[in-house]
Structure formats: C-alpha cells, structure tokens
Amino acid sequence: MDFRLTEQQRELQAAAREFARAELPDIASQLERDNRPPSRDLVRRYAGMGFLGINAPAELGGLGLGSVDALIVLEEFAKISSAVAFPIFESMVGPVRAVEHFAGQALKDRVVPQVCSGEMIVAVAMSEPDAGSALTDLKTRGVLDGDVVTLNGTKRWCSGGGHADAYVVYCRLSDDPGAKGIGAVLVEKDAPGLTFGPNEELMGFRGIPSADLNFDDCSVPAENIIVPAGGFKQLMEAFDLERCGNATMALGQASGALEDVLQYVQERRQFGKPLVDFQAVQMKLAEMQMKVEAARLLIWRAAGNAEEGLPSVLDSSVAKCFANSIAREVTGDAVQLMGAYGYSKEFPMERRLRDAWGWGIAGGAIDIQKVNIASAMLGRRFDQRK
Image 1 (cartoon, helix red, strand yellow):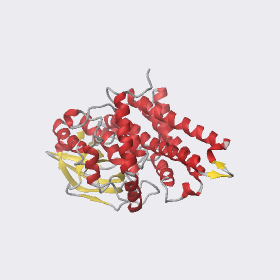
Image 2 (image 1 turned 30 degrees about the vertical axis):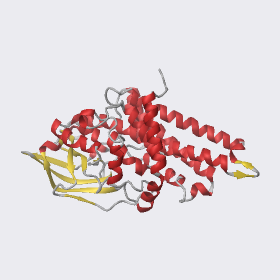
Image 3 (image 1 turned 135 degrees about the horizontal axis):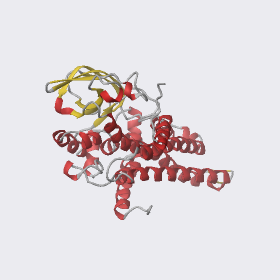
Image 4 (image 1 turned 180 degrees about the horizontal axis):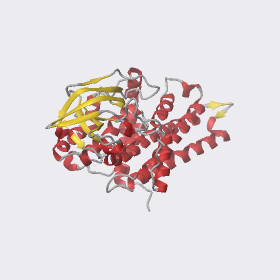
C-alpha cells in the first residue's frame, strides 16, 4: 500500500495549484460579492486546460483518468473557493456521472462530451419541499406516454438552478411506492413547462446558484430517461461518488484555510514575537493538520477502492461525514487564529467557514451519513418512519 502520489498525479496537482493560485483569487472575490457563478468563458478555459471531465472516458471527451486524479485537482480549486471549483465538481463527480454510467448511448454521446468541453453544465434536482433527507418521499411525477415524458412537481435546493443547461431530475416514474417508483430524467433548461424560482440567498455558497425548479406539464423526449422506475439504487450508487466530491469541496475549505493561516501566524507579531512561537498556536496548528490529512486519506481511500467502478456507501459516507465535520472545525480555528482579519470580509477565511457549514448540509447531512455508516456496518437498513 503506497500512499505517495504518482509522478503524473503530482504534475496534475501542481498544474491545478499553479493555475488556481495565480488566476482565481480575484475572480473568487468577485463571485462572492456579486453572488454570480463563474462565466462560461472561464468554464471553457477550464476545459481547454484539461480540468473538466478528468475521470470521464476518453471516448466521451474526458481524460480517462481515475477519480483520485480528479479529486486531487478539485481540492486545489476548492482551496480558492467553492464557487470557482463548482464547475469542476459538476464535471467530475456530479450528476453527469449518472448519465455516463446508466443512460442510453445516444444520451451519453450528446451530454458527456459537451460537459467535458465546457459547453454544457448539468445539475441535479433531487430535494423537494417535503423530501430532503427522506428522499424516497418525493412527489415529482413523470408520466411516459409514447415517446414523451411529462413531468409535474417542484424541486428545491437545486445547486445550479436557473443557471445550468440541463438537470438530472429524480422523479416518480411509476405508481410503485417508495424507492421502487423512482427513476431519473434529463430535462434541459428550455424544455416547455419548466420554470425557475428566484436565486436563493444562502449563508454561504455565494456564486453557486440555487433555485426551485417548477414542472408544469413539462415535456421531454422519452430518450431522456436516464434510469427507469426502480433505478433508485443505481442513482444512489452514482451519488456515492458525489459524496467523495462533496467531501473534497469541504476538505478544500479546510486545507486552504490551513495553508493561509500557516503563513499568517508566521508573519503576524504580538507581544514582540510571531504568533507561531506561542505553544498554544503550535498545538492548534498540529490539530488542524491531523484533521486535514485524515480527511484527505479517507476520501482517497473511497475513490481509490472504486477505481474500477463507483465507491461503496460505507467508504463514501465515512469520508463525507468526517470531512464535513473537520472542515467546520478547521475553518473555525483558522478564523480564531487570525482574529479580526479572519472575521473580515476583506479576506477569504470567513467565506470558507460559511461554505464549510454548507457542505455538511448539501448532498446528505452529516447525521444522515452516520445512519448510512451504521447501516453499512450492520448490513441492514433502518426505517426512520417507524
């Protein structure tokens, strides 16, 4: 078991880090101020540099590398901000992977290469007003009639809502109860009957648009069905990789905070000496380093164990739960160590703290991951409704 990165992975990491550090901090600040997502020109620039679809097959426009390679790049962008990293997140571990793994060949060929080239952004629409953690309670319905699927319902907390070009919509495609009736359909933004609510104002995640999706007799071709009714388990298998991406986005907030605060405590002087010379600061730095390293290894284990397929629910939930938790702790410690400079909006630290809290809610809350972990450990499902 070798924990060292390969030469290719180190080169990939260095290229991502150099570009992100040199080009993106000012853009991240602007996206935060304006609460706008990265421009399409920037997304296409990512594509031109090979940062989109790193783990997508070469025949579909990707680089054909592994998920660990993709997550190494994602962390370097996430260190700058969640917003500048989000297009990379979506292209590597987001809903496009469900299309890649489970959709028909025609749909794969139409969608995945466009995502890898930066010409299409695909978001996921899962949650509803009455179905968040209890996802199998969703009510959005798709009715197949001939070669058309007609959808009705509302999706909430859709990251990319109103901005993305297409949405992987989890919906009820049969009358079967619970998970048995759930599948997924790709709905493009100009589909008749699809409208969007206003952009949400959130505590963090500025620059990552979030809005309701409203389906009112929204019609899409039947060929846009990604998985039919009964495919909920497949969708969740693809979502296990999204958990690794979510965990990496959280890790990026923590590792970016640690890198910045290391520089700060060596430069900032109080009582006649640098802050780093105080033993209490040294202890805090060591604790932060341990948490960051442990989270990174858990994420890489989950992705590495799944290089021939998709991560297990146990590995991905452990990685997400831990990374989400330590990101809140490490960014909080960094704010405290930097004092007023950490609390000021003139610096990125307070943004990292707010975003770190968001990643522990998005994609399955921390406590839900603990239920997943216990279920996987014991080999049984726990019915929260009883």
